[in-house]
Length: 312
Picture 1 (cartoon, helix red, strand yellow):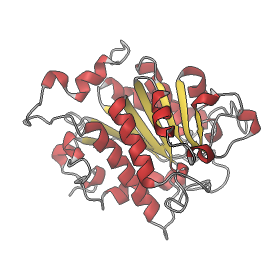
Picture 2: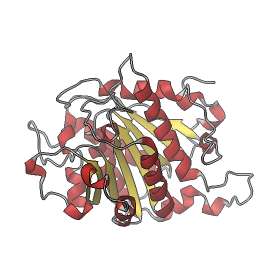
Picture 3: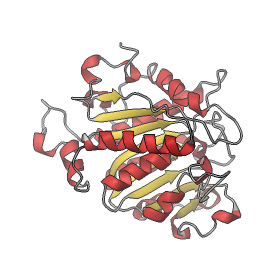
């Protein structure tokens, strides 16, 4: 085990050249307005990942064999705007290297940069936001890069579908298409919400997950926990459907606010990340396996769906 690598994986799976997956940590917590500590989220997530079994029972796979490169963290914190631009550039750099790019924050303003990069690189991008909060303010506390503005830009420039909402300000009403906003109190009584939310997405999908989407009974360590959230298996069922039916081009997970006396949230975040990778790569053969085709690996197929932008 190499503790400098994601999940302690061997060096043969951790190098950039051979890895299909890139993980960018963003330890930023510059604009949160209640509990501080999301900047410690990536470290707690990585620590939990190193203590996680790497065989996934459900998919009968070990997705780390596809290679996971742990990138240098984005540490720019001079201003929210500077952080967003640094995330934007780092994300875009690795997309151009034809990697499946993932990020772990940090507060949700991180996602402004990641979504901007994916929207520049992929045609007709849909953004699936799984979150307790709408995050649709155009500006908050003097900045449009505040955590309360996390998906405003996405609402204006992508197809934004929001799932699990249960907290918003009246100023956010009408910003996004109400047919693409799935509220928790309605989802509880709707047997078809997963189907409807998936149908609202286009082909290319970026997923952003704020961990406060989960009910605080299973994930209390977030900056702004809200009662009445999603539970583990319904969330996995939905994500599995999205990965099966759409081309998920990348994702980020944000807002882990670790508590040294409560480690279950850290481990939930670690398992969620690994599950999402497992769903993405479960039907993609590795070199040497039956069905492997170097011309039709995930990387080749994913590149064909990108805009015609060459690597700098």
